[in-house]
Length: 573
View 1 (tube, helix red, strand yellow):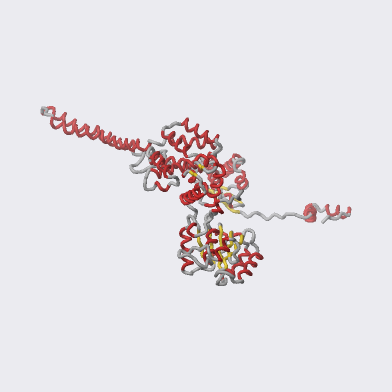
View 2: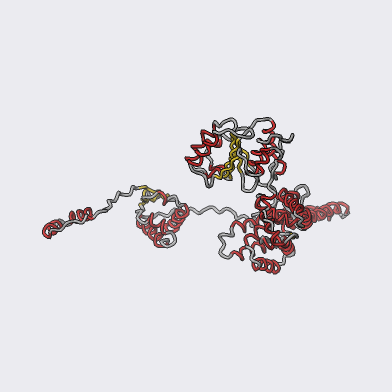
């Protein structure tokens, strides 16, 4: 039975052209090799599984190749390439800084640098996870990195660039590797599936790519896992079952239930999600992503921003036509607030259920208000015009002429209040061209505080202060401890001064506000000023030894000295 080789090793790129998702970096390295402008040190940084060490190995192989191609790729035929492929090249050294991070390890490396290459032009040192080097090891490596021999090249790789000394960074040419996109990972997995004679659904590979979170190595590991699970036929259902991913169908059904205001079906679907073992917070996060995709699906220009298959994009676009933009924006805001407050909720399931049921009453609110604003002025206008046109055509006797004039004057005065009152009923609801996403309630009018200016005495201040301490002893014990001995003093009839020995007391804004409000109500005066006085805490002498304790006691009671002498006692010190 042949030994199994994981896909991450079997299909590891061996040329610059086969590196996935890092075209700008590979092109720069190829141009540097072509123009012979290689710096002495490179730093490859970025997240895990994006090709840092792979690019380092390809570069080390290419610059030592004796017959590179016009595209600056290794020929794989020369002696240097063959020794590299067989892992017995003496010109390329790989060092794991996670396990070789001491000064001695770096000194051994520096000693090797002094020996020129026996085959090829360069000796290349690849130091992986370089941020794991100790401070002393970095210092020992610094001089060699700054002035290495012409034949020595250093390629450093790390996932945590911020942990590397600035003096090291300034001596390296830095390349930031980016996360690999979902489309690039999916296409790479499709190519591997074809080579391995594996049938894989496009949406199944898309889920694997999303689960990998930009790391190609993680995607290949998941791919191998799915092959072990489902054999040579990888389906979407198998992937979501094995990776514990919520099916898209849940989210499409929830939106349909919300649009029809079917609260019971929503609760049953959420119960199904919980019983299947899915995290309820992952559900609300996934639903927020679903609403975002619906928002993108309303415009063909941005529909490609979805990281889903082409077939699923069309389905999003179809459901997006059933939803108004206001509904999607408001529901997306509700889902986001639900996710933010999820951790602080004591009943998390109810918290999500309330959020979903709120969404049921979002659709249709905004258009109703706008329609009312447009229709009402058009009803009154023909009535006024019909009256003003018909009245001059009526011929009446001269004796009745004042009656006609009275009608023509009174009719506009009857309609005018109705025309003025109509916008005032709805003008506060919304304004044309604006959408309120988070504010649904009518703003309350500002109420000015009534002026209380009762005269109070020192006794009333002391009593109110002690009453506050007694009533808040259990709710704010730390704050009460800070003001308990503050000795509030009335100064000038409008200023209350109190003493504290810790400035943090007055920086407790909430409790200081509570104290101020309590005193206002107790004294029926809101014009006074609270002012603190910082007093230094006296230095307390701490007695540590038995001798110090005895001397203190003897100074307070001199008879202890005579007792000690008469009994011949000695202190145990």
